[in-house]
Length: 91
Ligand code: HEC
Image 1: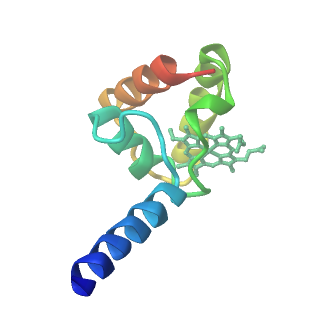
Image 2: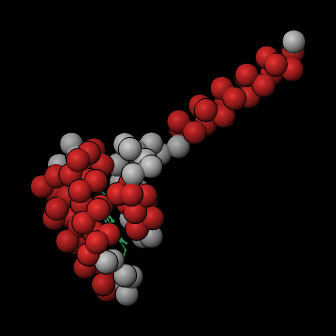
């Protein structure tokens, strides 16, 4: 009866709240996870669709430079996964 309706309403609201948060493509992939971890240390997460693959290539080199300046590790393997992820989902 009522309780069930309330539960459904709450679930619907919860799902809407989640959808409102930053949604990026294939969020469970290793590339997306690293992207979220590594690329939010200095600023908010930029959506993959914000740039073309070509632009991402240049930006990653730039970001690598910023990380080096700040002694933040950015292993080549992680960069590769993030780059592949961004290229797949670029504009
Ligand atoms: C060490 C700090 C740092 C890390 C870590 C970092 N960035 Fe940045 N990022 C910056 C700074 C500083 C700017 C601003 C540069 C400017 O506008 O001149 C910037 C700007 C950007 C921009 C351009 C502005 C925008 O919002 O469109 C993009 C895109 C971006 N970063 C992507 C990334 C990605 C992708 C990663 C992960 C690989 C990353 N950043 C990790 C420091 C960082």
